Length: 86
Image 1 (tube, rainbow, N blue to C red):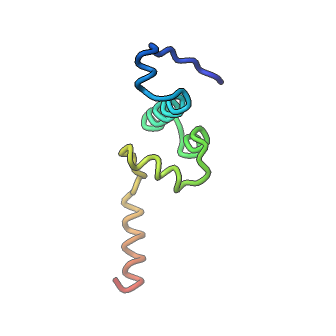
Image 2 (image 1 turned 135 degrees about the horizontal axis):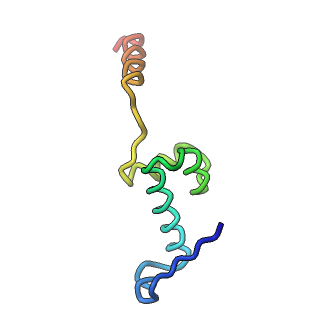
Image 3 (image 1 turned 90 degrees about the horizontal axis):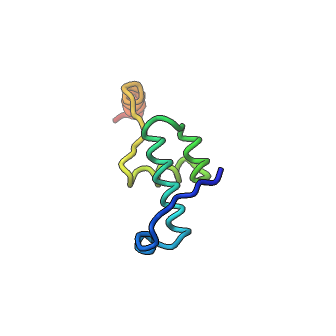
């Protein structure tokens, strides 16, 4: 799907070249939809053209979006640390 967004010329000039602006618009939309729960991590990665989960994390962390860490994850990490002698 192609989407056209109309931005006044004077603002568009200040916001960056067309390629940069297009990428930033896609990233902003994708990030917001992910935060709202409308997309999975895999879908977000696909939309952004990222190949790995690490690349996705590199994108998300500066935007203040962190993965979920559950109590079960904590319990598993504690068991692993105890098993290793920590």
